[in-house]
Structure formats: structure tokens, C-alpha cells
Image (tube, rainbow, N blue to C red; front, top):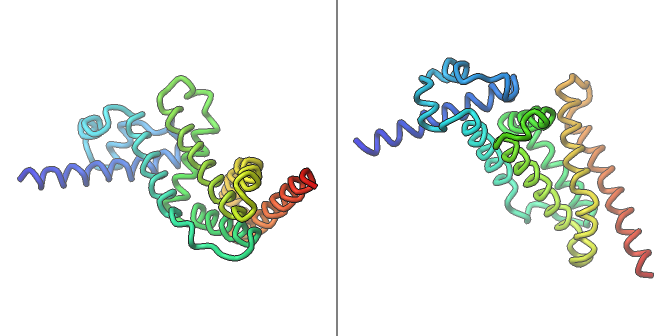
Length: 215
């Protein structure tokens, strides 16, 4: 009986998170009320408060699950091969296609972007810290892969290249997603391929600059 109750509780919790992720991605954090969340999830408000205590608690759970699912999907560094520039191109393209093409990942990205665009209004709230932490983790994730692509040049060189390009790489994916949402006739794959080519060009420029400093 206890296990059954626990199982039903977990189902309710996931239903709330699923519904909140969709509503917050569509309407933003401020535009999603607890009463709307209760109506859309089919669960009473008391159940939502029992699981999460507050709307910020719901947001934190949505952010944490979205980040865990996305970052967990790219935990293995052995899926790319080739030259450093080829590895970087493949890494960026595959990451971007997964984030934009997978419905759950795209929903997570949309929620992140909407929240960050209104970050000034949330700066004093705990939810601002949650969103900032997820963004920081995303940049760190990109940093690790860029650095891994150029690891054959040594710790110092690969670290410098990654430090120069990690924020830019994340910004390109954000921008491409917004372009797609705005109705661009160009496919995500084409836009991401162009962006990957640009990222590789910047990495190679950075590498040449570093090498020229040591000659």
C-alpha cells in the first residue's frame, strides 16, 4: 500500500512538471498561474503545493529536470572523431540539432530564453538563481566540448580557445532557435551547419593567434 501511494505521488509530481514546463514555455513564468497549472494538470492546487511548496519550487523542478535530461544526453565524449575542426563542427551541429529538434529540449530552451529575457523582474527571487545556474551549466557544457575538440594542442591552448568561444557558441544556438520560432524558411540543420562553420573558423583563428604568440 505504501509503495502504491509513493508511485501515485511520483506520477502526480511528473504530471505537474510536464504541465508546468509546457505552460511556462508558452506563457512565461509570470504568465503561468497556479490555478492554471492545477486546471491543465487535472490535479488540485493542494497537491501542487504539497509537492513543491510554491510556484518557484515548480520552476526549480522544471529547470532541474530539463537540464538533467539535456546534459545527460551528451555525457559521452567518444561520439565525435576526426580533426579538431571536424570534431568541433560535429559537436556543435549535433548539440544544436538535439536541443532545437527534440520537443522536450526545445521546450526547455524556450523556457530558459523567456525567463532570461525578463531576468530583471526576477533578480531578487530564488528562481533567478536557478535560471542563472542552468545557463552557467550550459556554457560550462559547451566549454568542455570545445576544449575536448582541441585537446591535442594541450591544456593551455585548448582552455584558451574554449574560454574565447563558449559563450558565443551558446548565443548562436539561442539565436538560431529564436529565428526558427519566428518562422524562418531556412531549416535548423542548414542554420546550425553555417553556425558550426563560423565557430570552427573562429577557433582556427584563435589557434593561429595563440601559435603566433609563441613563435
